[in-house]
Image (cartoon, rainbow, N blue to C red):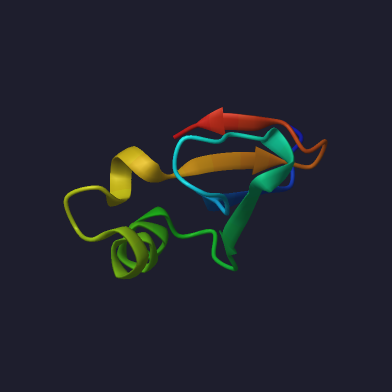
Length: 67
């Protein structure tokens, strides 16, 4: 089985309230392959209640998938 390169990440939006431009989205990625560590890192940004729901996975082709 071939492993793909992927990263855990949290999407963030840098814009004013009420305006959405897809180009304003950026991702905070985590340099870990450990799922539990990625959740702990996400909780530092989003808080423990929202961490799991906020995370996404970005594959080597740049495709974003829900966690």
